[in-house]
Length: 163
Image (cartoon, rainbow, N blue to C red; front, top):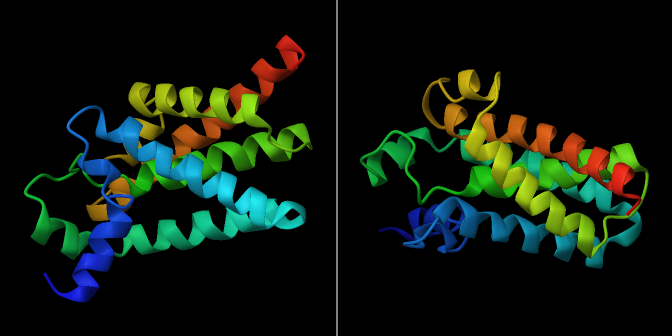
């Protein structure tokens, strides 16, 4: 594998988290949590822009990797590719923070993690339809819709519970 392909592999698998033998999507989402918390810590006053920028950049990168994914993994949507979960988690906390107009604390991150995983598994429409888009776009797009659903749900849950 060339150095460029190794870098692609690292990003697509969230530095190998997607290679977990147990629930690679769930373990891979932890890469999104780590990225979100790191950006929140490094750029507290600009975290919304940082999350949005990182999500957009990683989404575009992931969508451009169709040929590499097809060449590297035999499946159409390989479980080891978890960059979509990383971006989906960023979308979740971004939507929550925009709706709540408040900082995302530890409790909100925990609720966001579980909400995102739930909506990612459920694939509520149009997420299931987005999954049918060709190539890496389909791999990436359904998780972004799950992130929107999860962000709204976290906001509602946190409001209803008074957290």
